[in-house]
Length: 466
Image 1 (cartoon, helix red, strand yellow):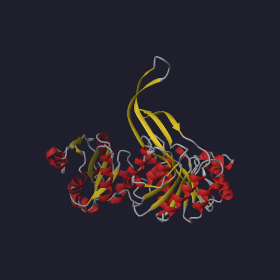
Image 2 (cartoon, one colour):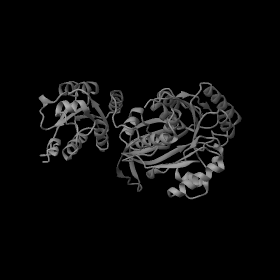
Image 3 (cartoon, helix red, strand yellow):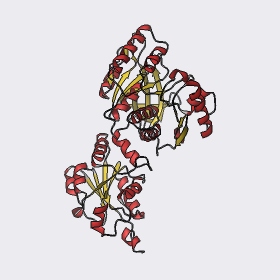
Image 4 (cartoon, one colour):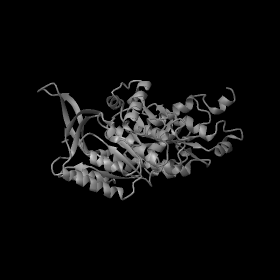
């Protein structure tokens, strides 16, 4: 998935997200409260800044316009580190909105906010309008309004952005969605939808009715309602589409809405329908909530997630370039990458047991499948029983598998040399001397895992009726 040519203007409430990580091992003798042992700290753009950060993480360009306070060097450095184009306006009177989250293990214990809200001064409005003019001169493909209710999206700012005649996507705040009239799509959660409509939005029918009421009243083109574990619902004048959530394991929902609107706007600006863009945004959200902290996803991760979803991308297979990019990103994040290969023609219990052992030996497992021609050369002209695309779809559906690719040769040596996994996995019927690619992996500090096999399980035996 290539968002590289796209440029998005993000306007809204910019924040600094700070994280203080540590541990809790005892209760204070002074009061019934946990004793937090301070560890490492990190800082990154939050609010509208996190929307822009998600856009650049997906490979596109982002210009960020918003208000910050004096002495905001940490935020400006974080913006620069994320390759975001800086259109920030410094206020003389309000501080940079800062959220400090205290995290013990994988559990967020508390959040400490430092902020000021209220109407803009004349100087702030003038500065924002000038920054918007400069950003619009660069001909962005879409506009995202990231509204956290801190005061940046004033009537004057909204009027200028509405006049730009570009597709506008809004992460809204408050009960008055008429402020976003003319927007291509807004993305409230279910509670925000109910508040704006003055109607319940618990079930599908209620949610759709509330969205249609707001669309008719406030003049927005479409509404994508994010519904947490229930997934998403896209309501348009001519129909609706509801899809389930993609996340298998949720660690932290911080910033998930920022990811949704970034992926939605990029996909639509890149030519996808709103329905397809919603599926892409849903997959992106499923990736980030499985990470700790205010996280982003890359185009490579998103491509892999879509490939693993039924019907989302037409194929579960990643090409070499996408697989290399994904492996490089995992390694850069300090994750160990495992590699297993085979025909996997008819998936059976032996395959599942081997892949479970493989996944337990690494953080991310890549499975490489022999092409159809390669299987035929190795197994005979009657094989494979299932074509490559079908075999890939089945393997990608296993929760242990992070990515699926293929190779056309008789062995995966070239692929192994390109990826250089940290862990090379084969069945225990092999020895170190007979495992293709082991010398190359060992030379780069990797290790070999020979997985135990379930006796009597094989595709050949199944086909023979045994």
